[in-house]
Image (cartoon, rainbow, N blue to C red; front, side, top):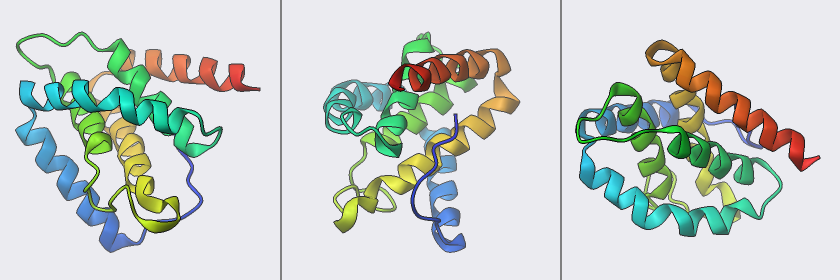
Length: 142
């Protein structure tokens, strides 16, 4: 799953995003999943109507959430998925979602791409299942 956005992020912003993602991975617990469960549906409704990278962004996160089997003990895969979804649901992340011109979700797209890269090292089976479902979604859009 690769979300292509209309803008390229500068190195400084990318470093900040990676630092925040790494921090989230170290902190992820049930409260982060609860936050995602409260916020994600609203964000999905708002962005899924776009037939561009924003719609792709929320669909990719939705697929990862649906494919996860969260339990009391979170696996490394769970932590990546929750960190990614949590970042999307946090409106005041590195580039606030309410930024002018709709650019506020570009950092969220970067997080989805970063999560995909990291999942390659953690759980290929999970990742490839998600990629197959994302490709089905893209094919059904046309």
